[in-house]
Length: 323
Image (tube, rainbow, N blue to C red; front, top):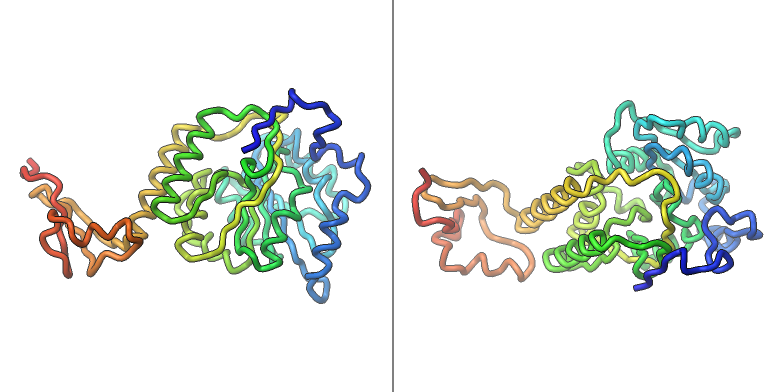
């Protein structure tokens, strides 16, 4: 893990996305790589999706530093911003190169991502935050494993790469706990599981249908759904910078509750449990022909608390009747 603080480094060692004017052809390697996969008739190869909510100080710089080209499209989904974010986009979008989609009410991070996906034309879809914390120069690292068929879904990781700010202990502990729960119950280790810098091919789009969480728990939900469906997920090293303007819209208590609710729901999905209810005897009745899932759940077939296995079984929870 590389925990780096910007105050400990000189400007010559750190180039944020704002420094693109100092670099000649910063996307030269990216362009050379994607030209190998360029579709016919100038079709879109890469769609870059940015969900946005009240980012008037950063959205212009973020958009101004993204790569351009006939095979790249940029989509901004405004989640009903109340500041001058849209005016800032209009200021730089003279040639209408940037597609702007507006929500008529604030629906949440996940809903904005899905709106962008539903309007994207690219073979590879990339999501980035609009607050300036992600470097567009990491795009090649994100899409390369997909185009070379090493992965279906990539997730940017500050722990494999670098981050230039002091990471709150609560954030790291929270991600570590989510990492372990996903690893135990779904067999996939993702360290930076809340990172919004992601890329995926069109095969993965099915996981974004019928999503249950429109807020930030959406990130965890999609990892679990992708794992359940058997898609190949890979974490890629990226750089993450400190947020210079505004503040995060995350409400920690709400996010924590949603994350654990999300994981519990999909554990039940993994168990393939369809209907369950509590009986007056204090037992839980689960309507299920058989328990299916990873070995960690195999005990459910044999525990002495199960009286009937097929087609209905009971798990003893309380020997006293419920009043």
